[in-house]
Length: 219
Image (cartoon, rainbow, N blue to C red; front, side, top):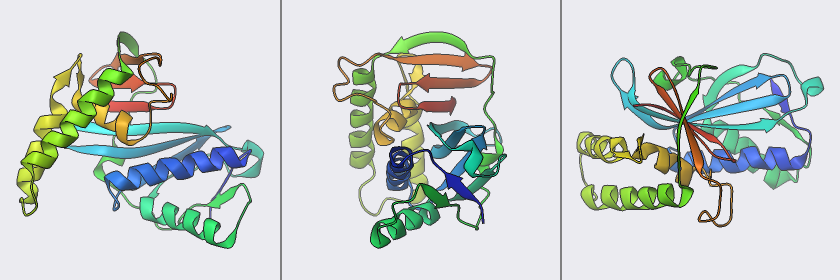
């Protein structure tokens, strides 16, 4: 069984918070865990997109330090969010204060995990206000809630969500705003005074980055 080894409890707690937020979006979702050197890249899906090229795909990416001497290199697995959350719940229940976390043995293969965003070639495009993104997220959530009352069919809800979160705001799909809001990528107590998010493009992909994480989109 693979394990992740963290340099301190704060880094491990950071992953726990990220997993908890991602699970609120989709409790049946997955997380891709990639270790390279002293960095763990944790990917989650915010919106799955559609079609062969997953148009409308929105991914969240948060990185955190790991101890390269305390684990095997080249870890790259996609596992259920629920499995990771269960491990954190068990740690809390038993008072486990170690800085190691076992990786669930059961892997999954969601369609989004088969697509790899470019590692390089990102060109700066613009900046966007974090406060503005949060406002877009709140308005979009309210619109989806109003338009999809209890009993709505799954296809109708999916169509509404695609329409709302695919809408462009300040040159980026509104789905980026949902990801920043839901995954806690604001990175500041007061978004009004926080540095703006930066937007980069590489081919068909967009990246919206804040001090707390990255949103990768395929419009």
